Length: 351
Image 1: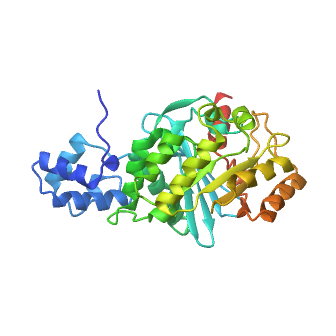
Image 2: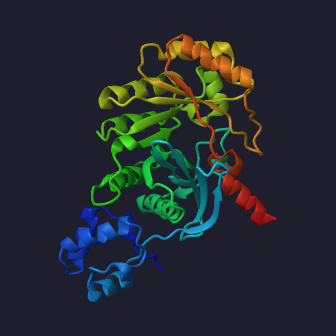
Image 3: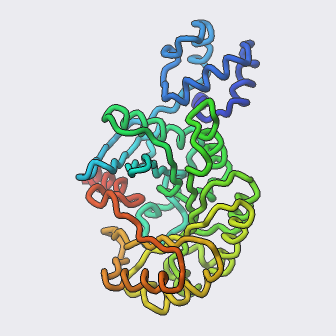
C-alpha cells in the first residue's frame, strides 16, 4: 500500500488545492502551514482546526517525523550532530553549529551521494535516493526543537553541505529553499542560506537564473584538471575553467560572492605551485577561498596536510590579494564531517 502524502512536503498553494479537494475553505491551508512549520507533528495539536477536518487529514495524510538515533554534542557545547531515521528506515545526518552571530544547520539533501569524491565519507555506498523537501524541512524542525530543549538559540542559517549533492536533487532542494523562506513559516532569508556544490556546471547556471540570491559554495579542491580528476569524479565531466566560469556567471547574476572550498590533502593539492595557480585562476574575481584542513576519514586513504603546508598555502593566497580564511574546525570529537557519524553508526550496528 502506498504511503500517505507528507504534508510537510507541500507548498502553501499545494495545501490550498488539497483543502479545496476536501471541500474545506482555502484559508485553512494557512493555518495548517503555520502549524507544520512550528514543528507540530500531530493534527490533534492544531487547536484551531475543526475535528471534522482533523479526521480527514488523519485518514489521508501524514507529517514526516524523524526518529533520533543518536545525538552527539561536542565538548565545547557549540556543535551538535544528529543521526535521524526516516520513515522508510533510511538514515541521514545533520549538524548544528553555534556561532556568535547565530546558529547554522548543515543538513543533508540525499541519502548517500553518487559524486564519489575520494576524501568524503558521505559517498560511501553511493546514492540511495533523493530526500524530499519535506524531509529536509523535517531536519530543520527536529534540530530546532532539540536546541530549544537545551536552551540553545534557534536556527537562523542553513548550509546545504551535508550528505549529498544539492544540485543533483535540484527540484526538491529548490522547493525546500522556498519553503523555509516563506514568511508564514521559518522565514529564513535567502542570504542566510548557502548551497554547496561539487560543480554541476549546467545546474549552477540554472540556479543563477532563479533569482533567489542564496550564497553559493563551490568545492574546487584543485587548480589543475589532472589533480581534480584524481580526487573528484565530477571533474571528468566539467573542467576547472568551466566551473569557475559558471561561478562568475552566478556572481554576475546575483551579486552574491561565491566561496570556493579547498580541502588541503597531503601531497596532492597543497604545494606552493598549487596556491600560485589558484591565485592566477581567481585573479580579478571578487570571490572567497575557504581553506579546509582535511577532516580525515578512517576508511579513506587521503591525509591532512601538515600545519606548515596549510599556513604556507594561505599566506600565498593572501599575498596575491585573494580573500581567504581557514575553516573553523568544529565537531572533530563527534564525527563532525559529512557522513562520518552515519558510517560509524552502521559499523557499530554490524558489530
